[in-house]
Length: 237
Length: 237
Image (cartoon, rainbow over all chains, first blue to last red; front, side, top):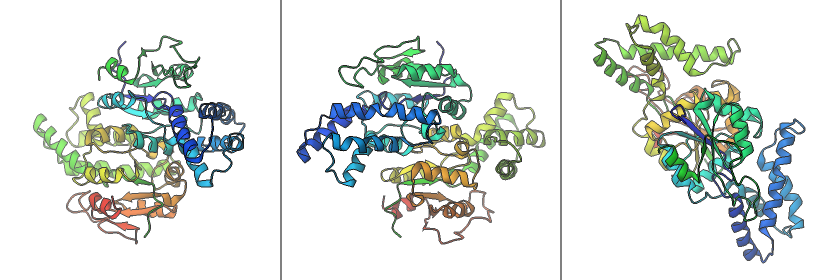
């Protein structure tokens, strides 16, 4: 396939570029030691994340007004604190815990792959995460984005059409000038529906060793790469 | 003044960070030689730029629909080509000339100043330029933005309220968490009106040696710096 028309690569970020679950468990285990707690952070991460999709779907269905992910995670966190024996955390510690999503660290291949691709393409996030969180996360993980685009810019969450249309308008304007890179088939399916190019990168440990979803490409995406270093190679960077 | 609350610096870009006029004249003079032309590129730059404000004001007043800067400059360029003896340029050469706005190079202090400030603050454009042009210009000039924000994100041009409100919402949310850095007093006045912090950097040669406007700070902006290196020093970066 000829990719000479592509001028921008947009990346799903949580899962595709950063290991949100691994970071959360590592930070949580450090908190267990510091506070003499016994929280099962893998279970905590799974339960917390499970709140995310229904809340975003409610925004997309206009069942609730536009709500930042920071607030979506915060409302679930408040419910979970007593269940996990975390009700003794101070207000500052709860704030810090909620912002763990802004401290997710890259997978081992992410930084090197992005740096290679940056010489040839405009690189952007296209994430359901909040704008400032994505910017701060990039600083922490040394992720070389040229720009940040996310649900907050469009006031809709993926896979709502508005977010893909926004990326195409800002980074195209032809849909095939923009390629989505993602580890989630649903996201690539939506992007393809708008005429964007698609690249799948499996992240088989995003949800831990027992992961059952998104282990393989479910359609003939334009590129199927092993990781972001391999993607850079396939894009001749 | 205490700036400890500031987490993001947003920069007017054309004039404040890049020397659009100097780049245009340098590229134009090279074109004169290559094509045996005799265009007065300083006059060309002044006339071309003069079209920009009225067209943006018409968008802000809803007298015309949202129009990208690329199209605003292109319509004026088409009018100017025969006046300046440029009607023999090919379609590709005209496209390239219009995109000179995406190739504006930084002032000598811009890159070094921004790199120092990047370690402490989220750095964004807040420009009336188009999104992809700003991203491409940053690559060419090695400008270390964390993100790009511009009129295109808000579908309004500065000094319309929507663009400042957007910057505050995405990078605050408190207005005093965001500081506008600009060489244009009108822009800082609008930002202050929204509660943002303000920093003035004079660019006395933006419009050439005869410049009469924006030579000095016209209000007591929070910071008045000599250039972006000096601003980094004042912000203790």
